[in-house]
Image (cartoon, rainbow, N blue to C red; front, side):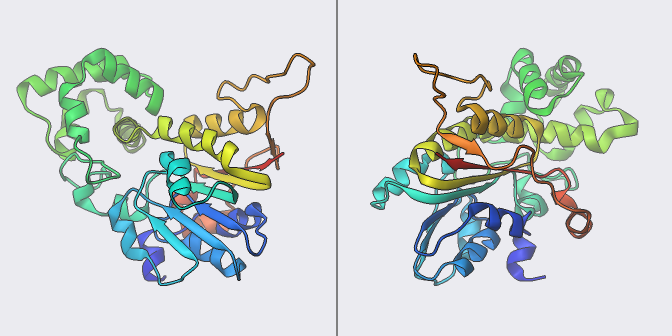
Length: 302
């Protein structure tokens, strides 16, 4: 395994590159650069084209290479249109987004993303941001915590979990991942503790990093930024993300409701390339367990 693969092993690599339907000379966006695996695969398909890569995590910038066709921006992908405009780009031929967190972020204890380490309760994708997951846990009222756990983690006992946390933090300030795990033991199912804790951590990460709003911003801007025939490829890892992507690609909105003009003509500007999501095969899942929940969807600009 290469150094870049150790940072983040790209999921559905060949499928996503094929999904972009790359044409030489085109401009392509990798919205989630990470270890550079997807970007490098795009560059291999190009001779005269260009790749603009985004990543809000400054650690990812160290994975840059000297390829003159590559520009890496230290930015959240929700600022896609503004960042491309600043580079004199008004249209692109393909956009790829591999959502979620990188292997590097999970495996770096001090980032606080993993239940495996007792580390500061951080979870910032952009380490320059002011707020941390600890702030959320220690300041959100129970009702707001419940909404977060229910919507972003689909946790069935979210109300009880929130009450337990609200009480625990009055006894001891929750500073680390270990503190959090200990505080919620009374409502953690022993038979499925690993899954439950993953849902709790996922909820916090999504809330802190505004991942749902950022994804919506990316999808809206992608629709406007793509050339006719350009492709949008999105890899998601939980049902909330996948539902937003599916609805937007099918109907042009996040509710999945078809919109028509006064003449009855469909208003959507994108067409799904495949009806069902593309999933990793067993060989990939065996080699990379983090690919297990991945779903890839592709749409083409009409």
